[in-house]
Image (cartoon, rainbow, N blue to C red; front, side):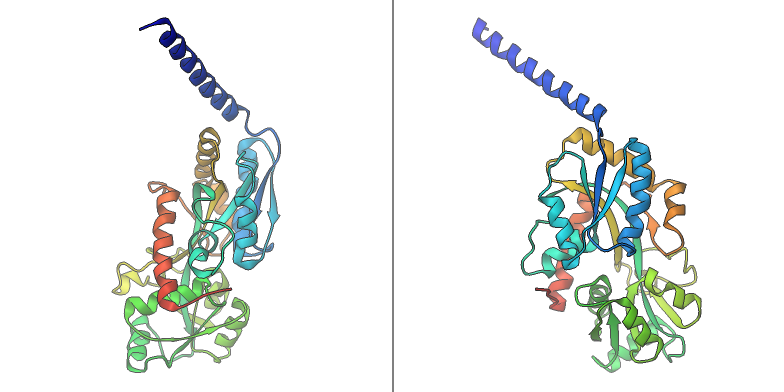
Length: 327
């Protein structure tokens, strides 16, 4: 080995050592100022309800304030795009959802961001099932009865949802394709008016996330036929899942996960992931989520990146089959 080669090797090793040192210093120093957590929906909604306790506990863990910024609009796309175009320094984080990071890429004709390429996945934080509900006075008492009637009278049973492309709508579409029935979709401008019409017997059926319909199930105004998660909801322990009623592969949940802009340095990614996973599994986080049906994620065997990939593929098929689009 000649002297020039030796010098080059020494230079390479020195540079490599500096990179490792700077990475370690970066991880140890981070954070040194407040962090903003972008919530892509208005205050008070499900995403906000998940984000606020996470921000509080993450701030305590990182010993630096995590500030919520609500940036609603365009199905979450405005907030998502803001984060996608932010610096990957760990000081801008994103409360992503099944909509912003799994559905919108197929649903919107023109999306200003890429759901995977523009983000660094950190951790899945919480999930909530959709509930299939009817009016408590309806003659349909079970999921089997609903399916039987829908097969005998295709496209005559109407179901309400919070709107085109919402988790309720696409869960309904997935349910139709899985059970090979045809229903009639009635989109509303939000859950509240749809629930009002269901209670008033203006529509016979609804697919909606649990937090919207739970109070009316508890009060006896609505009857839950099934939940769409793989396992039963602790808040509706007597309500079976679609999977256990003969469709074992069926699963549909709303979910919330922490993301950062793409190319976040690995030491910061690792720190955020470790702290977020610990928070999601904590009693404090579960307590702060309350009894609205949103469940903290406690299983981190599958990475958020892999989970997101499978969710994107699943919902792309549903969007295509349903024909749903949003301009």
